[in-house]
Image 1 (cartoon, rainbow, N blue to C red):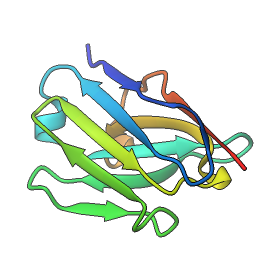
Image 2 (image 1 turned 90 degrees about the horizontal axis):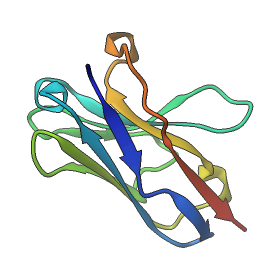
Image 3 (image 1 turned 60 degrees about the horizontal axis):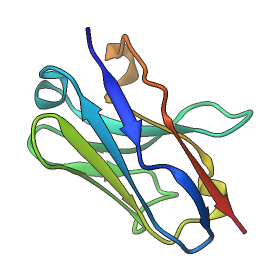
Length: 115
């Protein structure tokens, strides 16, 4: 069974930084484009950033220049978030991209940015 475990969230002041981690079981991360998503209260889940198996990256306009997605091996993925803004407050999830390929979602990790 696929497992995706997100961690690293927390409460931070605007302008601060956080580093999120995603641990994926099996070979899901090595075989797929992986992405970070987020869902704020009352809003739909949105794509934050993705990384392909050959290392290409894409970012949502709202985080471009502030967030960096990376992988260190076939199982771990990270999201370095700098210059955080209150509008970045959300639950952050990692999963495959696109989402129609995903049949399991982890618990996510809460990021709260205070103004």
